[in-house]
Length: 127
Image 1 (cartoon, rainbow, N blue to C red):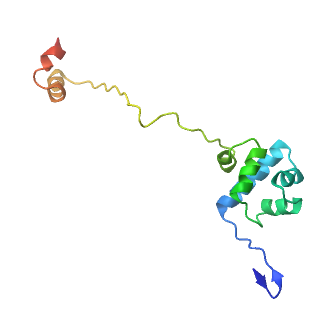
Image 2 (tube, rainbow, N blue to C red; image 1 turned 90 degrees about the vertical axis):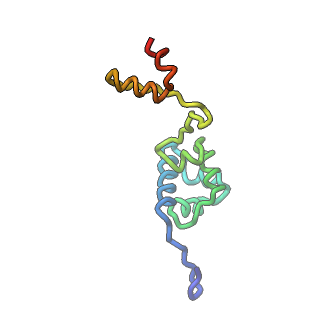
Image 3 (cartoon, rainbow, N blue to C red; image 1 turned 30 degrees about the vertical axis):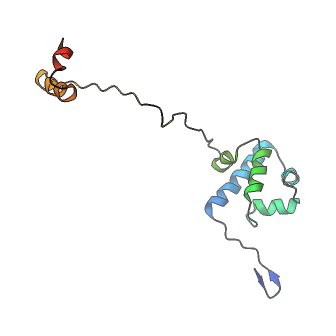
C-alpha cells in the first residue's frame, strides 16, 4: 500500500502462516542452515529471505516446496512440524473382519441363532 509516497508493508499475517514460518525457522536452526544459505537456495537475496521469516512478505508455495527440499523434508512435514505425516495403510476397499462374542443364556442363544441363521440351520449349529 502506498500513502503520500511512502510504501507500507502489509503486516496482516494469519495464525497458520505464522506457525509455518516458526516451523521453518526451527527446522532451519536445527539443521544448522543460515539465512544466507536459504536465500541462495531460493535464488533471492538474504534480506528478502529475512522478510519471509519475519512475516513481512508472503511465502509462495513454490518457495515452500524449495525450502522443504533444502530440509530434505516433504511440504506436509514442514507444515505439521514437529509432527510427521504418516499415510494410513488401510484401504477402504479391503473387507473388514470382525468377531463378535456374546454371552447369552440358552433360551436367548437359540433366539439369536434363529434370527441370524434361520429355523433350519439352528439344529446344525447346536450339534
